[in-house]
Length: 199
Image (tube, rainbow, N blue to C red):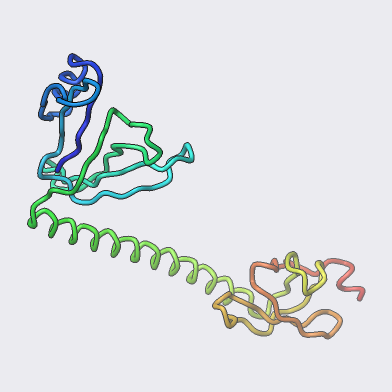
């Protein structure tokens, strides 16, 4: 079954049906008079509900676009019962060939997301790696975190990654104490501040 619509005005129903390249049916036989039409016959692949920006839940139909040979979403109703564009219902009616294309389409989209996420992760890793290499043997100052007093300075003697994968450094403070801290919680110093030299 495709997406079905209805409204009180026959003129408006015909106008909307024509605009959507739909099929006009005429007046309902029972209950209050409504004028009906339907769209996307044989192209409805999957329907689901999701939260809308207004806080309501909207009903969505995934349909096949024959001209573009791809899939898109049509919001055709509201779960709360407030109709959207006069939609009164819809169900999946696409044949097996289109359903198979949709399965491939979903797999391709999922793979594209995985690759994009992996690429972003690799870029962050590479950026952290170059910073770690550059800091080895350089003076740094603590500017974040809570374990080590801000302003503590010292020379980096170790760089690497912690148990959770975060880039970390080890530095020996000007007071002779060794500290380990996440890379994002320090900044590189061009030279030690006066208070660090005096301590």
